[in-house]
Picture 1 (cartoon, helix red, strand yellow):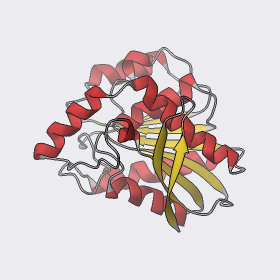
Picture 2 (picture 1 turned 180 degrees about the horizontal axis):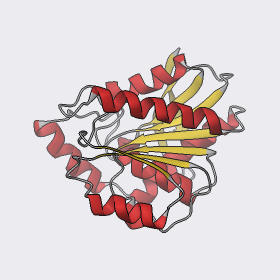
Picture 3 (picture 1 turned 135 degrees about the horizontal axis):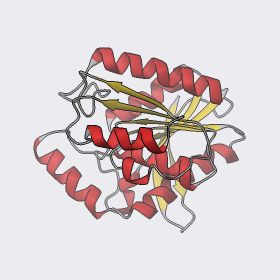
Length: 223
C-alpha cells in the first residue's frame, strides 16, 4: 500500500512524501532521494522495503524549489538537477528529512533507520551525525561525506561507494576510513556513481545486489 502524505518541517514548510507499507510494520525507514527528486526508482525502493516489512517514507526535498519535481538522469534532466541541487539550502534539506523521521516516530516506531542515495547518501550521514533521530543509517555513493567525516555518528552507519566513481575520489574514501576506522565501508571496484539505480546507465547489477543485501542485513541488525 502506497500513498502521498504532506509533512510539516520544524520551520513550518509543508512538503510531500511518498509512503509505502503499513504504519504498524515491524520496521521504519526514511528513504532519501538522489538529486533527481522522488523518482520512480526511489519509489521502487520504498515499495521494495514495504514488501520486506518496513514502513518507508521518501520526502520530496525539492518541494521548497518546485513542487513534485522529478528529473531525468541524463541530458537536460541532469543539467537541471545539478542547478536545482545547487540552489537548495542544505540546512533546509536536513529539516525535511528530519520531518520524515519525526513522522515515523509519531506513528509509533521507536527505532527508525535511513537509507540515502547520492545527495541522499550525504543527508543520511548528516542525519546520523547532526540529529539523534536514527538508530541506523546507510549511505550509497554519498558525495561530500569526506569533508564531514570528522563528525561522530550518533548511531551505526554503513557506507557504499563505487570504485569507478569520478564524483567521489579514492582520496575521499581514504579520508573517511582514517577518520572513522570502525565504520562499515564497502567499495565496489567495478561500479560507477549511481550503480544501484536500474534507470541509470551506470547501473551495475552485481554491485547493486551485494550492496542491497549488506544494507538489509545491517538495517535488520540495528532496527
